[in-house]
Length: 223
Image 1 (tube, one colour):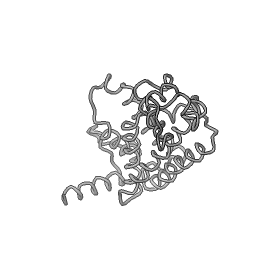
Image 2: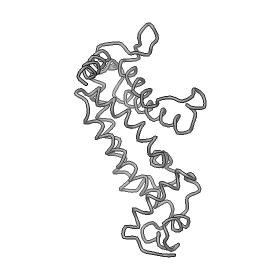
Image 3: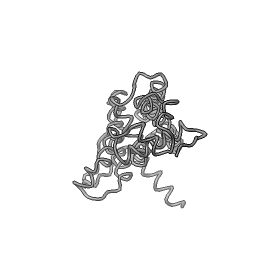
Image 4: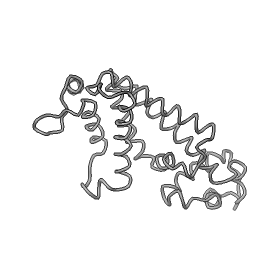
């Protein structure tokens, strides 16, 4: 039965995200989405002439939501290091909670990467990370890394952990893990210049790492 949605565009985007989580990107079709939301087969064309247009819009929305989540996370903390650590954990958490958004952004073969709105969204997303990374690097023990290398290293860390979690590799190989806790500890080690305690506990050393632990300890005593 066909009926009219007051905001069909957003309904279709939400339905597309659900379908991607359930069936994957390749199986997605406008006809199937039309059936899913209860509109005629031709209705989606009023907003999206083809699958690529739909996925381009979905990828743009994913970037906007991703960036908003990182900016909100980055408001926490008193130092650039704390803020960037929070952004790193947020990156992993957002990917796990929104796998369709995470996957579509990383699959440019399915959408039009040259689209103006998508390009704008990706630039703003990238700048959010780049600026936070630049500030954190100046407070970290990894200042010997140039800004670009520091950004790539930290971005790869968050993206890699999210990917390993979502494709099941971590659970298959090492069993159940607290992925957010691992992300936080991994960032601590990287931001501390890769230095760890001699006891191999994974606890980073160095002034910036000790400052982070001191602040965390102070917070625990006041709660």
